[in-house]
Length: 500
Image (cartoon, rainbow, N blue to C red):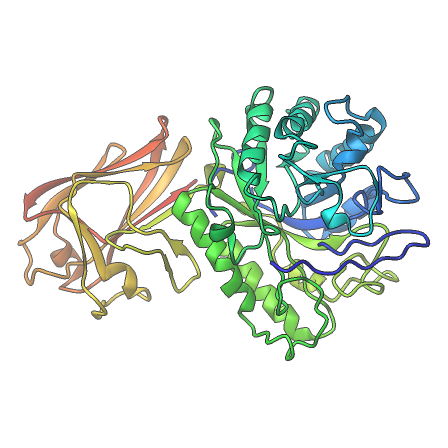
């Protein structure tokens, strides 16, 4: 992702315009919200509170909660919290962060603690804060120092009801291949003192959603407690910078540009069965067509159980002074707020946010007509696959799911978080031509569907049939689906696992 230029106002403040899945174990509702920018402002590190930087207020929390936006990403600087590597945390600065977290918790809101450091650490005055200091993992800033900082932060904030998770570093970039090792060191340090909190990992390459997989080939990382969330950022202008320096038409924008750009990230999440979060996205209010882009994008996040925080609000700017900002101005909401408020926090997501969709028999992932991502075939035991091509399938708006199948397997063993699930199994008889030719049993978590004849129950060949199993308990981290043949081999076309 090409980094957006920074807008500076040196006289008083420095304005930095930066603005599915599984394993959100700390929360059971879909969360949307906003970045509250301010504590990362300034080009002097550490700088002076009230002059170089500030923190959001309780009244701001009240405003965003009134819009249903209850997830707050709180950018701050590592250097202000720990001004000497391996040193003690600054108790005054920690107190300021804790005040925000406590105020959020009392309102039923959650805070992402975002070290807004671009994969770097340095003290002094900088012309470009995105490349200040030294890269984490270098001899000047060892990975062990990064781990030390986050171990101390986790010791301070573990168990806090207002903390959604630890966002290790904002938009690491040009990390010389060091970032995965750095992040793993921080995970290990945090887990030595805190087994429960979400650890949020951004990606190298400015955490860009479009190029997530290629920029981060060593992901996913190892967390013994499976509470890691991967965070991408995404803007919709021509260079993905968030500058929006040209008009909608000159940028080459179109209504679903955000959907197209985020889908590689969502597909990566689905294929690896890990939690996803888009920590920054934003549009200008200069052209109403950008709001359509935002609406389509948010609907895709919502459909795929990916959380999100808009860039940005904060006490030192508003939508009158900055086109992306959503802080109120003159008592009036920003034009973007009506779209953001369509996607409030709330509604239930599965245990740990778990949603698993498997396109059985397929070698590639698939996005269905609702925008939901189905992973390529995985977790089967035995059998073989076949792709029937573009055959017509009745009784469905998504024939693609039924055009591939896995047959002859004894079971699927799908890793999921412990909890209770509903399971939908998708079938279509695409080979045999009469009832009674293929008959088998399917068992899910102790519930058995005996003598399933897909042709007979669907009413013919090439016709979709969905069988549902409810209240399936999982206590050992694996949901098991078993198949027992009576005539011919069992077959399946799709598996959907949804937590209650």
